Image (cartoon, rainbow, N blue to C red; front, side, top):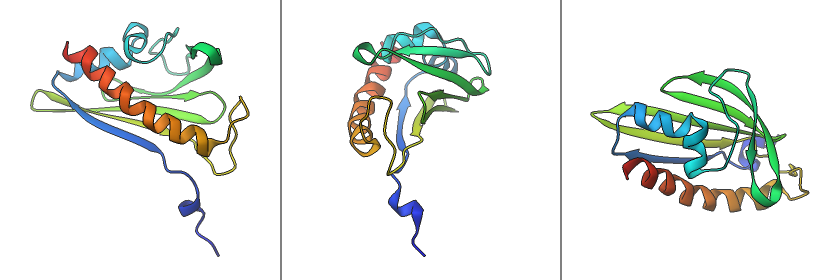
Length: 141
């Protein structure tokens, strides 16, 4: 019997420490204006079950749905047909640890645009490195 877990792509996880109180970080990751400032234009609202769109530029509007909302510690939403994004926050002595988790990858998965999950995951993994730094710049400005 083979171990399926070892064959499926891992969640993308990015953790950074931000020199800001948790509420300031929450406002940057759980409001439409905040998300637009460092990630993508959107019509997000922090409401459980709320359906919204991320404007992915040349890829068009990606449908999303808020699946978890626990202010100011955790927000999760479905993104497109396969993925879930989670923003987890923890306050520690006046700074905030922020963890982004991008899950829903599968070895045989294919995006709405016909690209394999393996290829897109690699691109997104690199892209998230830049985006969390953009979040840092936005918050610590």
